[in-house]
Image (cartoon, rainbow, N blue to C red; front, side, top):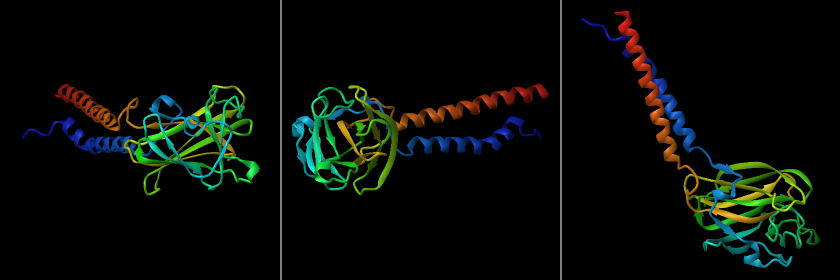
Length: 241
């Protein structure tokens, strides 16, 4: 009776390991949200000046907004207090693009307690992002959190920024999911007194690699590794004979 070739016995032992690697690849591909500091990952802009004008007026929370692509929603402070609409180079001397409208959360003249800026989406989107600057000069950390329609946290992304007076250098921070399940986005910084400029919505997976493609790449790589091992072990078994 001819015995089982050595490479077959070896493959029996390593197959569970290969399957484990494959399952880990699938888990990583689908887990969590993806953070981004690239505004090109998001397609549909929301211009605050177009929505509210840019004459430094104070607005109550919340306010309705409409995007260039006709998406709608609400924006306001988590403190439920007033916010202020300003404009880079006119009533805001920071580092947003010249003329950009911004929502400022620290209306100190009304005794506001600065807090996060919360945005809701009437129709769920893949994700959102916005230009952001701390009110205090120097380094800061910005954070965005995404939530679904039941306000379950989908994920959090943070990025470092620098607050100065060099227009056109503001940090953009955003995040997106693999499906259109994002109903809320919360922007904040570690100093809590900040402004966000133009917001951008991710309304499709355009410009990013879909998660299923990642899975297709993981599978062939594992199968290719198995093939290489089988061929090498087959040659060794023939040499032994």
